[in-house]
Length: 471
Image (tube, rainbow, N blue to C red):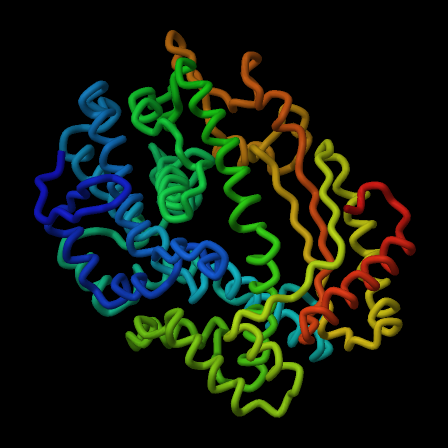
């Protein structure tokens, strides 16, 4: 049990207690920056209350990590660690939970994916073909690792406390050769990240899907014979509820038709910012921002201000139009939609269908007289679990199984993925996946005309694809 130094009132967990060192961490500029990075990106444009930050979420993740570790310590005394090792590792796990999101870009995953796509396209257009020479932009975990090791304030704090920054970042990155005990506390299907954001999203959106019985779930956390976090079979239904809740949360928030539409605009506008050097996010650019301390200013507010500059300054009329629509919540129209729940083996067939639709967009755009740059084919796949009972031939099965919700046998202390547990719904449902595809068009016209155009476009698309699966 860590002696509380600071107590913070939180709408989800009540009171969050932080140690002296954790309090110092949250006062750094790189961590304070998370106050201005929204956890749910642009979802607040649909759910007005969904504007909570990665700052509050990170505090919540640290709080849940502390609760789990304290329960385990009281119940099991964490006997696989000696006394000094236990104190050190409990501390490391709490700090890893606190810092697990410190490397997120403004507007989180949308910008991260846009950056990767932009630099890859620029690299291929430069005539390159050897993928080994492509310097992939840093994902948020690698940015977090770089911050922990090189941010002037955070790295100094860690050094002064005798904490190995590499060991710390390895916990949430699950790097080979590092201390493995309980690392799935921070990175797994059932981890402190998900346990906090599901509850926090439910609170801020007033949607019920994240209202899981976390208290009971935490009371049934166990440690298996390989020192991984698992749960007692008594909590099976609660764990299934969490997995179902996470699935519905994605469907209603991240995959909401309007959220997806406006995040497409954001992604395209970010491409414009990068093309015109209004922002720079290559590997070296991000490393320079971190080492100079300027990363602390790189947040949602700065990006929105840059987009406003782009809207006024760009000579690209389509880029200007998209920026205007983004800043003024002018939403692209959903023209056609496909949602199918199928066995995971349907993936190849779905990919073929997606490719066919993407090839037809030019035809539809030409017929409608709407520039192809105003069209977008959105597609997602979503499963309830990381692995299924029939996916053991997947070359990444073992790695995914490590992150699965694990059920522990109380006598042998052996745990196994929930999809291998015969009484679990996930043994069946884990073999299925949602395949979703949508066609969006940005039409900036009067409402009556927009409805007429949308109806005509939908008719043309459905004539091309006489498939009952189209809605």
